[in-house]
Image 1 (tube, rainbow over the protein chains, first blue to last red):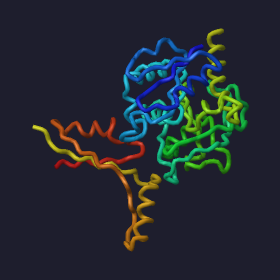
Image 2: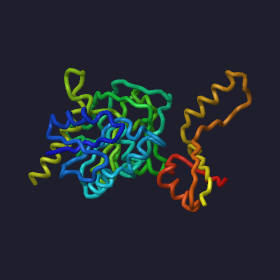
Image 3: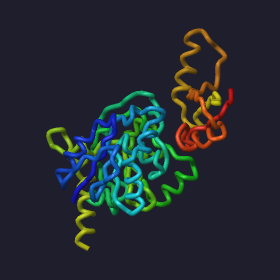
Image 4: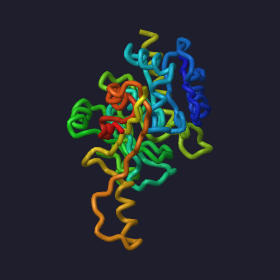
Length: 225
Length: 75
């Protein structure tokens, strides 16, 4: 299977994301100004500072030409993974519920965090076990997930929270310890921590690879069906 | 004829506003007592030909209605 990894002006984690994807499949970088997704099987919106984070994080990137195609791809059920800034972009685009606010401390934080897998029967977590802990780095200033009460209730009732910060690990103040959330249909997922930075034993944890492996396995199973 | 318009964007009431809190804590340290409910938002100034469209601009781009309120002030 082939992943497409978006690159906006100001994106900085697309090469790590590409390398992570290439551990389980093939990967192509897609430029923000193009509209052609080149027939990829899944899209990754990577981390960084798209369009300099001007106005609000993710606010301008969501109107990039490539995003029109990503939104259409997502509406047709194509798997889309948003990491960090990618998560922010997908929230701004209305593909994921909620919004990301500045960290409670107002500080940029870069650290390894423990996450708990809430649901393992999904496109993005099928290589994990329910309740499993993943150790993945996080690095951001604007990662406090928030949704108004009514929306939050819906998200919880639908089981859309796939990853939560483990007890004591919620450093950014996210509502209900939410670290990663999917859309209602289940084919779009965003998280603040960086699974693409946890794919090589050299850097201490390979837990992030499970997210890419899950997308790959889902795609392979779908192709075989 | 274009017209000057100001858009004031604020965090919605009840939303965590750590910037406002940080400013509120800093003021007494400088001797400014009696300050409460500090909120930090954004000011966007635009020259527009059709001011009636600014609301739509706010909904689509200038503010995120999920977390922010906006106010349009025509100069």
